[in-house]
Amino acid sequence: MLTNLHRWPARSFWFLTGGLALLLGAVGAVLPILPTTPFVILSAFAFGKSCPRLQVWLESRPVFGPAITDWRTHGAIAPRYKAISVLMMAGALGLGLASALPLAIKLLQAVLVAAGAWFFLSRPNPLGCSTTCLTIRRRPPADR
Image 1 (cartoon, helix red, strand yellow):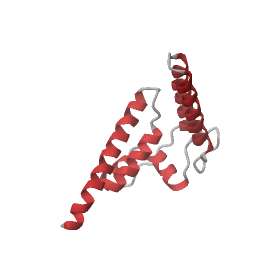
Image 2 (cartoon, one colour):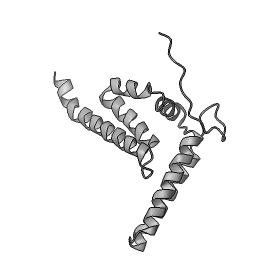
Image 3 (cartoon, one colour):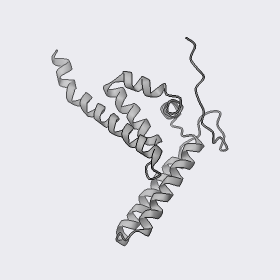
């Protein structure tokens, strides 16, 4: 009983983190300002620490599962997701540069976007996926 009680705050933290990351990923699927893939990967990680059943559910989704598996096994991001993420970052940077923000904020945003883009582009491609692999890979249906 005591072992479960002392784990409750950590599990709650990871569950809330996973839920928030998944929500941001869902918003990112609609709005071009937020990238979806990093938030979905973070949510799978957080759910793995708090509620493994949700992690398995998320990994079994045809849209998110392959991206999570590629990241977990190889630290890889498919070229399609790299392109979408960099385009979204460039769009957000463009909005920031066109705004009335102070120059220091614009420079900070440019540096952070450049660092994020470098990180995404420096990740390897998934196995069996060349630089021209821009389609969504779906898992084959499981035998029942």
